Image (cartoon, rainbow, N blue to C red; front, side):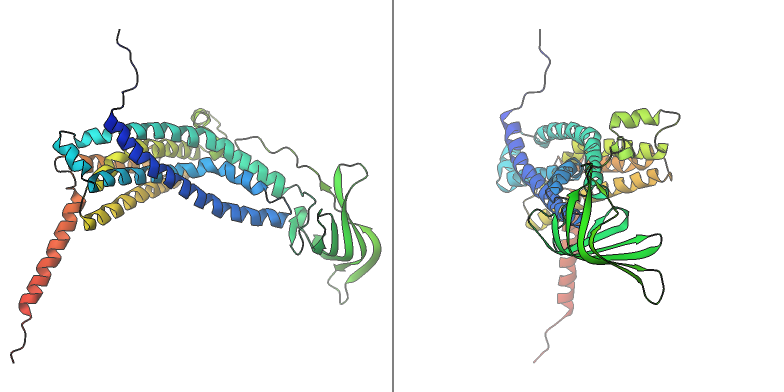
Amino acid sequence: MASIGLPRLRILDRYVLMLTLKPMLLCLGVVLSALLLERILRLIDILATAGAPVFIAFALAANLVPHYMGFAMPAGFALGIYSSISKLSMGAELEAGLASGVSVRTLVRPLIMLGALLSILSIVIVGYAAPYCRYSYREIINQSVSYAWRAHAPAATFISVKDGLTITADDVDKTGRKLRGVFIQNRENDVDVVTSAEGGELELTPDKLQIQLRLKNGAVIRDYGAERPSTLRFQDFVLDRKFDLTAPPFRPRGGSERELTLSELWTEMGEPAPSAPYNQLSAEFHSRIARSLSLIFLPLLIVPLSMTMRRNTRIANMVTAAVATVLYHNSLQIGETLADKGVAPAWITCWTPFAAFLAMSVWLFTTSTDRPGDTAISRMVDGIEGAITRAFRGLKGRVRPAEG
């Protein structure tokens, strides 16, 4: 009995995949590192301002990886395909293969298989891992920034604590608990209150459940709008604000359609009273599927644009591939926004860019297999070059040297 399994990879298939995977993985690493580094710098600034430990920024950045993978994977795959086929073309390996009977469809076969695997991986990441990571990201932000204060005050930094309270200190010891040159600003009953003290210390309340700030040798100034504000001087003073050691439990997952998995989105779309408007759920569901499935057909677009030997055509093909990929994903984003706003159904706004992308890819591939490297783009470049050459020749014929 014949066994049914995955198609076997030939030597040529493995070679093409090896040439594709190396630049693809390198591009993924570079793009993810750049995106995460930029976000980590912003998170460190936010956490430092809130008085939270800055190492939490790395946990927050880790939860952003699935989100960024949805954008980095198509770019990395496109670059990997372009790099591998261009290398075969420039090294005369492509010509030798075609002369020996290897067709362009044979070269595309392993890339389509890789695109199918990446499509499944994208659905898993974007459809299931990203919603959980997005919720975890917001939960950490709530516990570290929006609510809980970790009782650590960096020196010469304004810390925005809950309820509009701002604290800064000129000097802080290594523990972050003992302060010198304390300045506090807040608002009580529509009255601006400023408190300053020579020193202060963060300590536990007697019940060990909260944190309080004890100040030494200072003054409390309340501005009631009179000519002279009210001033109260003190030697020992406990700020009337208490800070919880831990934040209360965060809300359940599902507060946004982006926190729902594909299965949950599908279920909610069928509910008579969904947790979010139907158009928002539908836009999120269809955009995730369309973005992931496009990876399967990406080789049909990139491979024809990669098979060329002339430098000027290579540049034009590279620009075309980049513009087409970016234009498709931006169109898909616009379609998702239109569906989210209820302008049109998601199956129209999200799948129309997908259908246009698929039609362009299939058309470009089918019109380029007879003469590899001869595409509509290369013919357009040749036409422009010919027009420029004829124009210069005509101009040269009209301009005659002056007779002596």
